[in-house]
Each structure stands twice: as C-alpha cells, then as structure tokens.
Length: 217
Image (cartoon, rainbow, N blue to C red; front, side, top):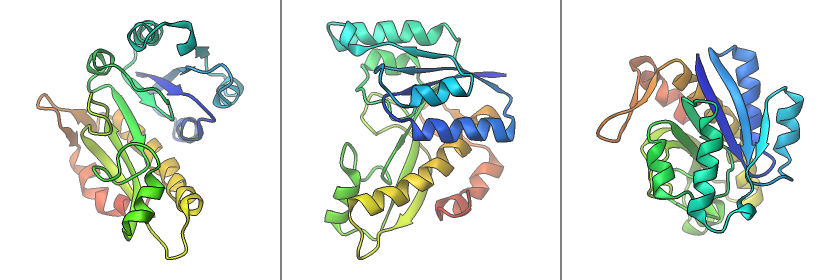
C-alpha cells in the first residue's frame, strides 16, 4: 500500500483527476494529504470534500526558499510518502529538497519535453510553428523540467489555435495522462533507476504508442 502526497498551489485540476481515478480504479494506495503553499488554493476545498486531509505550508511564513523547503519536507514526511505528486505546485524547489525525494517525486509539464521548458509553453509552441504539442510526466530532478520522461500525450496544433484553445486541449490530455502514470507507479510499473532514468514495465512500454496519440488514455 503506497502513501501518496499531492502538492498544489491553485485549483488543482490535475489533482482532481488523480483523486477521481483513485476512487474509480481502487488503487492499492493511500491519498494521505493534499498540501498547498497558498491558503486560498481552490483545490483544497475539493480535497476536503473528498475526505482527504489538507494542509497549508505557506511560503510567506519563511524568510527564504531553503527554510521553506525544510518546513515543507517536514510536513510531507509525516505521511511517509512513497510518491510526491506536483500538481500545479508553483514553487521552484531547492536542489536539496528535490534530491531528497529523488525517484519519489513526479511532475506534469504542459509541453513535449525537452521542448518548451518553463512558462508560457502554449505561446512558445504557437510561435515556433510546431505541428504537435502536448504534455509530459517526468521524474523531478534539480534541472528545471529536465528530469527523466515517463510518458507523454500529444495533441495537434491547429491553424486557428490561440494560447487558450491549445491550453484547453492539452489540459484535457493532462487529466488523462497524469492519473494513468500515477496508477503505473502504484502498480510498481514505473521506477527511477540508479543511473537516473525512468524504467517502465514491459506491458506499459508496449502501450506507449497508444498513449502517445493522446486518444488512448
């Protein structure tokens, strides 16, 4: 039985998708807590309604990034997590924090990494003139948006797309992709290897062509 902690900063739509999949698929896991750095994060209300423990560890209560990360780590570790999920957690984490959770912390990024790291990914994609865009779930490492890729979902970039329309279509795939990857982790079908790579079980790896279409999740 794996312990899961989810970190959010806002509405937590990916957190909601994960919770719904957890209920629907009856994962062999515990959703121990949803933690936010913002007391006004809308996703906290959803988690509370679902009977999940919520906590706020506000970054405003600490003088610097390092002291905040120490406090956040202490809060997370109360639940002995096997997996820490970043679901719209809008904080740049210190190397020490990231390395502490190496192989146990994942994130979803709204682009097909390694392309379009950082912010405004949909604008970057449109300005670059790419034909496909999407989302990537990856292990978190100190390199921003640079950890080992676990899985990706692809959407077409349409001629009349703007940032909002493209973002909506990518987000729909995020809500399918992220719960699927978490489910794989719970089933021990995803692992972080000693040489810093993502290893997938054979049946998962064989399904990736289907996953990559963005329609088979």
